[in-house]
Length: 114
Image 1 (tube, rainbow, N blue to C red):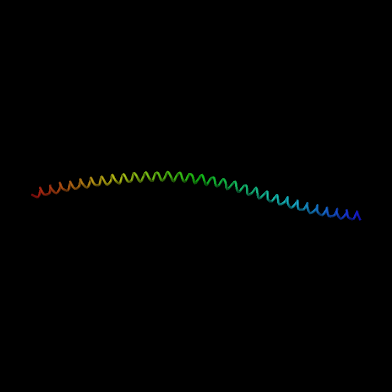
Image 2: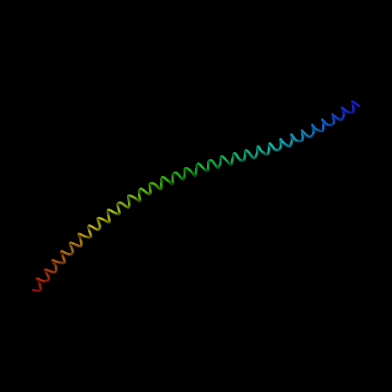
């Protein structure tokens, strides 16, 4: 009876050992799959970080360029305003000169008619 009890216990231990080995093999396989997934995710993360850095760099360059363009536009507007004022002044002088010439012409025409 003792031998029978030991055989049963031995059988149970072998069964438990087999099940544990099967679980271990399954876990090793799952660990391998997870390691592959982790490596893939790590690669994707590094690619995303690089892409993000490139986008940040491009955005910074665009912002600097926009600021320079805004400054150029501001300078151009100032120059245009100054030129417009000079044009108004020149036009007023020309109108004044033409009025004076017209007056001189009218005087000359009156003198010639008499």
